[in-house]
Length: 369
Image (tube, rainbow, N blue to C red):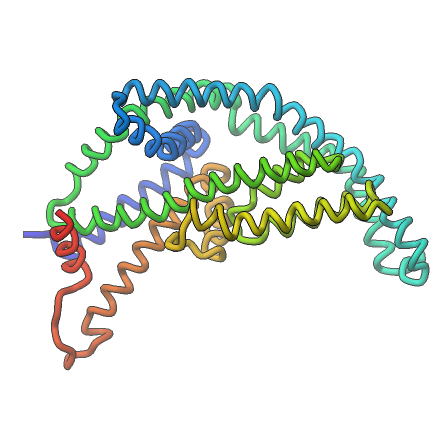
């Protein structure tokens, strides 16, 4: 006989409270393990494909690890130094860019930018703030990131955790399945599959899209000759997971920088704009349909809200777990809505009885087997 719903809610509520308390107090400690788990989850389908190709799980994990180490080494040696150099250079150049913008607007719109105008004062204040605080803010962010993340722990612990989790992933999933409450196991399995489908579509799919577009933007902008093309491309690719935002922010930043660098060279400016237009065409018609699909189920507003809330409450670790938690809550919310539509509260006492949402899930699982 199953526990009453009231008791089940109490136990699950306690488990959720313990989870959030642990995240609150152990956020910095569990960061390498969260990252390692995310890496293992991301790479598990590749390991499964290698197994189907004839490799053992140990060999598949070893092959993935060797390739990942080679890629990481190449990125660390070739990309990261240039990225840091361009970021520092952009911070140093930003005050001069604002001064050039002010001079440009003053020469062409003298009435708008007189000494007492609001726009003139705003630009002057922004330039002074960047000049006095830009380097300080970057150094503070870098110092805080180093103190929170602890680069040595990330470089050592994350790969080790990812390796062992990837190697034992299928066994861990089997053990977790054995611990599910027997009465609710079919429903939990179905919900878990829906959550995994959402996460696979978003994290794996959008993660791949972000990497491809970020690389495309960075390489093409550097080929065009944009001074800070690597930084702009990296920023645009990083925030591509929010529809249109990555292209809009990256395009505005690239065109803004291009105006100062290529003023009068309209061909180069047109190429910069065309890069982002082509990127949007590729993303909307090729990358997103092929890699993400239409059944992700994570609305951009819900995603931004989850990132904001979890980032504020739990810091960097909260931002890492925001997407999985948002996906899980979205799937559970849809399941709860189905249950509500099957309830007497929605249908009323005159409605004909039929199988509930959870019963339909069990029946669908049985039919698949």
